Image 1 (cartoon, rainbow, N blue to C red):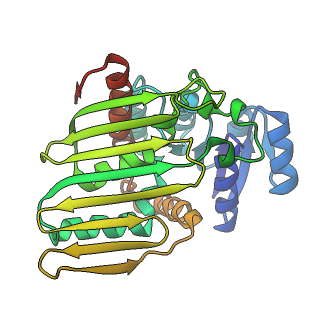
Image 2: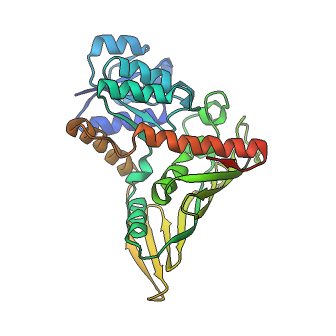
Image 3: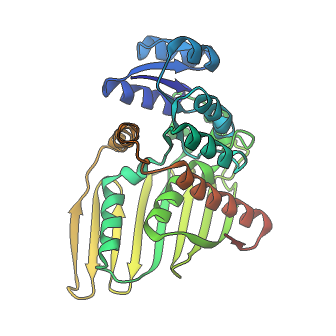
Amino acid sequence: MKILVVGCGSIGRRHITNLISLGYETIGVETNPEYRKWVEENLKIKTYPQFSDAITLEKASACWVCTPPNSHIQIAKEAIGAGLHTFIEKPVSSSLEGINGLIAMAKKKKLVLAVGYNLRFSKGVVKVKELVESGIIGRVLHARVSVGQYLPDWRPWQDYRKSYTASKSLGGGIILDASHEIDYIRWIMGEAKGVTCIARKVSSLEVETEDSADIICEFKSGAVANIHLDFIRRDPKRDCEIVGEKGTIELVFGQKVSLYTAESKQKQEFDVTDDHNNTYIRETEDFFRAVKEKKGPLVSAEEGMESLNLAIAAKQASEKGKTISL
């Protein structure tokens, strides 16, 4: 099976490397000649500057969309129109416009359309969801979710000021870029009913976007989650805790899940040591499983749209200074 990867920046390179490791013939598409040269020389793949040429000449079966969020829908529509199963890196877009039409196109052509929220494939997140669903901590009351890492350290080979994360027009900012946290807590706790947010640029980094956001999300279950996102923290940290009527679950990503129950009055630990890249491998395997079995992927476009809807509502809540109902 031949795969086209559109966008050969940081995340595109990761996906190209993983696709090759899984045995898929992979072709790059990139308008930036420096990026194109890098993947040709270092990843040893063929590239095209134009997506239309790659579609016409390569007869691929699937497409990975790894460009800035503001271009996702346009590229995905071209891919679906050409009959390609399509994987879109998160977020599915920078706005909700055009997503329903894209979903309808994919359904009509019976093509897989997935979104890249790889944290759903994290051993830690999967374990937390399993424990919550087992009922061992009772009804969930509250969650705290946090991620922070210094933007210039994300992609050391690139000037952070030129990244899409730093650009408002390209769909950057910490809320969209770190919407992984929004997605996985939705997956665990269910649909949201309202969101409040304070999002600001608080650092001296040269960006146009918010670099820090504190989101309070109320779920239909009545539970509340505090979600902190930033790209200003110098020592990277990603964790989560979920408080229920009968106990507490804590997750330190890539390390451990701790379970405390009121009944035992003790903490039990589960080893969830994991290489972060394995989450990308698993989501790729899930995509091809969906293609083979003609069943939906774990993170469908509909799921991606719901997480984007919550992220956009958080941005609106900050801008308007009020709670946004969902």
